[in-house]
Image (tube, rainbow, N blue to C red; front, side):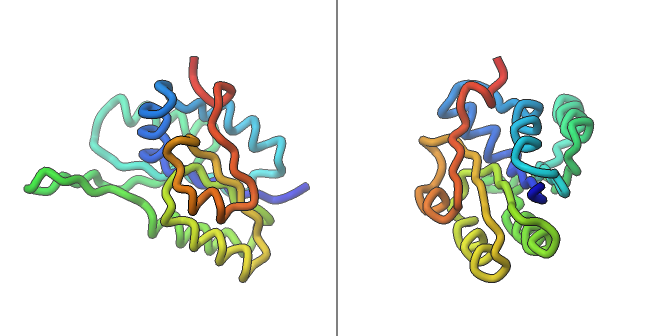
Length: 158
């Protein structure tokens, strides 16, 4: 069976699903779909930490499903802007995973990952699958992956 690694940009998936699909993503349903694709060797969920009880409960649910949750402090700057993206962390972990898996599965619509997916294919022969909200996933990211899986009703909470 194919060895796979999962990488979830939690904030990106939360906001794109809410904005374009009006519902929350179903991580249990996703995990079941991913298991049909191969053996899950690694599974990371990248989120920000705000010290909020509801968020902590959600992160514990992700852990119970099988994800290793990586947290970064949520930063709100004096000018009102916010910081908390995980692009560099996800990139480093995907590069490391390329040494031990056949396919990476990325949940994000962020076009910045297009270069990374092309590099993994060209340098390591790794295939990639991207799950994203169709309306809010960068076309560059869709074009750079081997398989684009639009998030549909089967992957949304009811």
